[in-house]
Image (cartoon, one colour):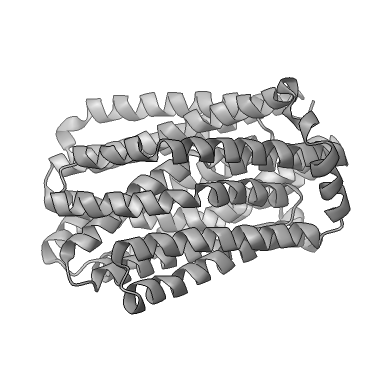
Length: 445
């Protein structure tokens, strides 16, 4: 175990994927802070509320479509490991085709989707501005969804530098244009949305330039010019459709848990729902860090399966597991020592601070429980076992509901207990499936 951890070449291989993705993930909360800060300095409070409402719907929509990146990473990694260039190119063209098809549907349905804002409890002013934000922001769908596919394609080839620069570049442009459009052009909410649209298009332009500067540039051009129609063979699309469907259901279950926590917390009072929002940001920090390991697991697992190299896979997974444990312990210790200080940093409202203090103990426990779910998700995405991800998530969701119902008299503590149970069941379920398949020599067939 220790010899694997001290293997510098193995550490370098994992770090080359994990570290760039952790660094680029840091842009995500930074952009959210800038959007909030810019909207918060407009002359009417409803602008800030409309950004919160509109961006939450957009974020949910695009989160549910993140299967485009995940499925592309797994399938491309396996083709990369098998040294099958045609299969890698098919992953690219098929992924882009599906992304553009979904984007077209979203653009055609943007008006009916925007009507959903009228069903919220927000004021008429907030709902109107949220619709304005949504109807501009949705035009980033073609670029953003294509970017998800391209990021997955690069990661599948164990190239994390390109996705890192795509995210840093697009988020930097977004931040600058936020200020320009709102402060100088006075476009208000529409300016914040327009900044995101242009930034996503710029990120796509950078990604395309990366492709055409790569050694595969001529092959990509040849494939898109001469073999594009072949990639629309429905038989070839079937594995990708099946994998995307299963990952979508998995993501829907995950989002359902966090939506339930938000809505049920609201039923317990304004201070509790605010405290839960602050505490969930602790878990978001854990996910940002561990996503780097999950991305590495996706790419390395897919490559090992493509190469039929079980020794490489087990060596990599041992090292990834050790880093997962180290990061989980670091987060837990940080929250144990400075949890209340973090809460006070995120909110200055005394009532919310006092309410959050009652639940900080759950934040100490959650990293130790949840970290394995993130890592094992990456392993099974790399193995393109969408059904396993879907089924274990459905079982974990049922476990979440059962635990909450049994302990509902604990009120908000019941929510956090149910969330811990949900993460534990995800981790345990995936670990049991992996161990069984490994013993039966079915994980790498």
